[in-house]
Amino acid sequence: MTKPDTTTPPMRPEPSVSVLMTVKDGARFLSEAVETILAQTHADLELVVVDDASTDETPDLLAGYAARDPRVRVIRNEKNLGVTAALNVGLRACRAPLIARADADDAYAPDRLEKQVAHLAAHPEIGVLGTAYTRMREDGTPIATISPPPEHEIIAARQLFTSSVLHPSVMMRADIVHAAGGYDESFTSAQDSALWARLRETTRFSNLPEPLVRYRVHGSSVMKTRGAAGRRTSLRTPRALLAAHLERPLDEEVAAAMVDLYQGYERLEPDAIRLAIPLLREALRRVPARYGRRAARALRAEAAASAVKQAGHHLWGDRAVARALFLFAATLSPRHALDRRALVALRPRRPGRAAAQAG
Image (cartoon, rainbow, N blue to C red):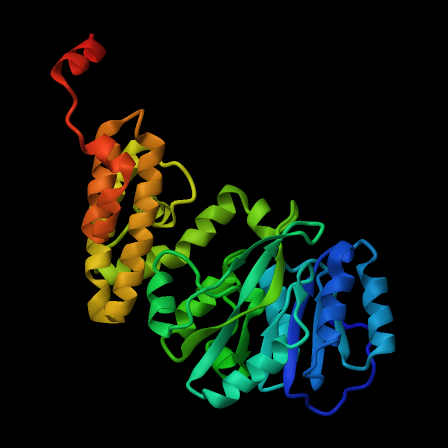
């Protein structure tokens, strides 16, 4: 059961932006997140916070903010519903025509909302607008700035393999989100990617180049705690998109191999690589017809870079796999054939050395 927190003040006139946040036992970082939202230069906002049955100091912190600032609206779930259902609770409570997402463990540049509101006003064709962002450690130390592509076609094409829109950076038009039915509650995680897959059929996406979000990576963050079940859930959307793109069914193992080879984050086993290369090649071959040549070039370059990285893992173990990866990369982006490691992998072994190793 969900009910408004008794500390929530009376309703104010409809704001221009609703900021939607959910939190569960997030007291450690909550204050920074809330205060950077309330300090926005675009002050005509409401902050809708869904407390998903927290047991730490979160309720007290939120009650204090609601008492001091009438823009804060707190909804407290009497029992834990999970992130996706909590997001839908908050989504139904948002009153503004624009909804900005925010997470309770991140921080936001003071002009984030101002810049997003202005961009959406100037570009009515865009329905979902993210931003560049800076990854930071628990203590706030910057790690790296990530600049996702601004072009809709590249964003849509990359969703075959990965997301190009950071969920807590997004501002979206409320009408299109409600028309799509909100978040799919069968997704316990990766609910944003599932929503983007539906919205990309009805609206356009973009990203602002300025890093307007500081995205915290820590031990309790979703990316660190999703586990095997979360991994399977995160594959549901790309698996469905790839199956439609290739016009053939894909089992989970095949989809995982394709996604992992494209992303290049982890070392893959040789069997997974052999499984993925021909299907990934075919998927990339089909990109220009659906998404255009610029998107095709962008995806080929990313896939080639990941293949080269993967080849490096196997260069001194399974040279046949390394060779296949370098050749795959070279067909996608010829400059990768000049990689010095490729020259090692592609160079024929001297018969004597091969015989000695065989012995």
